[in-house]
Image (cartoon, rainbow, N blue to C red):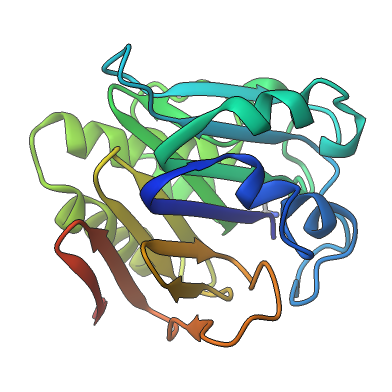
Length: 235
Ligand code: GLN
C-alpha cells in the first residue's frame, strides 16, 4: 500500500505533510509504521496544492523515491495552501512505474490518491480514458467521470468504491480526494487516520505521536469541509 496525507484548514506549507513531522511522508517512504502490504514506498511520489492564482490545483509528481528529489524541500517550504495533498508510492506487482501511474491524479479542481489494489476488470465498466495502465489511474478516471457529471464528491467517491468493491470483493480501495475546500477519504481495506485541531489532517497512518489521532473505521467515509468533519459508514 502506498501512503497518502492531506490537510484542510488555515494555510500551511506542504512540508507539514512531508518533512516537518517526525513520521511525515518522507519517513513513511522508507519506514512506514503501519503498512501491511509492501515495505517501502520508493516507486514515486506526488504533491498537490491550491493557489489563488489558478482555479485548478498545482500538481508535481515524479516516478523516483521522494528522498532523491533535492528540489522538493525548498518547494514544499514555500508551497502554502489551505488544502494540501501528498502521496508516496509502492507499485503493486505488475503495475508500471511511471509518472502517469503516480498520485495525485487530477482533473479540473480535483486531486485523487489511492492506497490499495484493485482488479482492473472490475473497473472496466466505470473507467474512462485512464492515463496509465495502473489500477489507481483507472480508479481515478472512474471517480473523475462521475464528478464531471455533477455528482457531489460525498456521493461520487463512495458510489465508485461500493460498485468496484462488489465486482472485486478483495479490492483495497482507500481513496483520498481533495477539491480545494473539501476532502473525502475512504477506509476500505487499509488504515486511515484523522487529526483535528484548527483544521483536519488525514493520513494513511499518523504523521507523529501527538495525542488525538483517531482511526477511521474500515468501510467508512470521512468528509471534511469548512463546516466540520463527518465520518459515516459506506454500506
Ligand atoms: N495499486 C496502486 C499502484 O500500483 C497503489 C499501490 C499501493 O497502494 N501500494 O500504484
